[in-house]
Length: 128
Picture 1 (tube, helix red, strand yellow):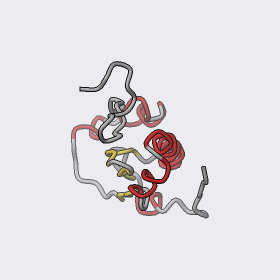
Picture 2 (spheres, helix red, strand yellow):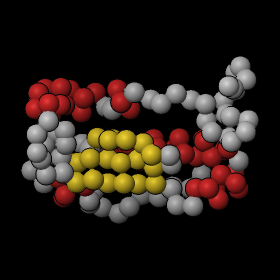
Picture 3 (cartoon, one colour):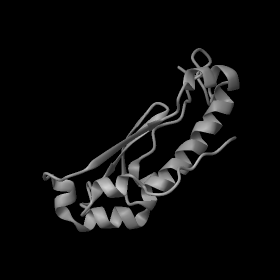
């Protein structure tokens, strides 16, 4: 049990924030496309590309920055990364600790999900 008003666990440093609902981070235009295609949510076979993205050596980074600063950094990472996924009409399948899994071609089918997932262009990097 966390102390009242705590943002982090005093023992492990884990953020005491409830997981976000997909509606809170999925742009409206993508949500509308998903809901417009009934088969997108009922299930069918599709060609998809999966992107897994995470922060390398995050445990060392937490030790160096501390939990509060790391939380700010990872929040910024998720904001930037999700903007890029949504820019190419991908959807977030799940968050996994310091990373996430994104799908391209599902639930919204695309003619070339693998081409979309490569996100042509130079990679973006950011420093805090």
